[in-house]
Length: 204
Ligand code: MN3
Image (cartoon, rainbow, N blue to C red):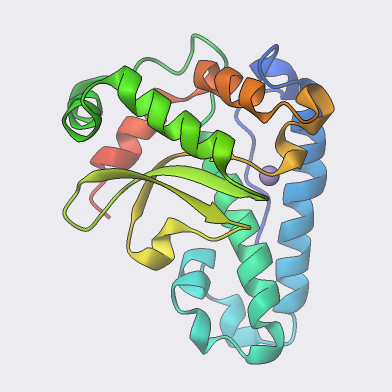
């Protein structure tokens, strides 16, 4: 079983003007594709590992031979996180609004929606280096924010991801250069809240 780039459900230009078409094209077609290719390459001599999903590979990382462990962690994490990220984005006006159980849970965890927005934005803006800022639930189902370096995933901490923003410079540099805060502000306009609710309400 080879790992494959998932289908992107919208055009490269669909998130304009918040996320530009060139950034989307390079991000999906070069960066994400690169993680998939390097993951497959790392696994090419390990037929039993080729049968595992990327979630299974990452949640039992100590079972991976040491010679390829870091490569699998980096590129498997890159593949998993980007696959999640594309689904959590939608063209402005198409992703719905925070609603239902997720909206209620955001209010009880953070006070109100604006406070949640401030907290996640502050975390994303202040995070140093490459990584991702997440909204996730813990084992008790409580919402929390966290930022993780490189391509670490909340799954390995037993957390269930709900929403994510990519903080690597490749996610915003072509349009926003060093102005990460402008990119973070723009990201709030292209969140797929319908998908976020599905993530929150899923039982796995
Ligand atoms: Mn990225």
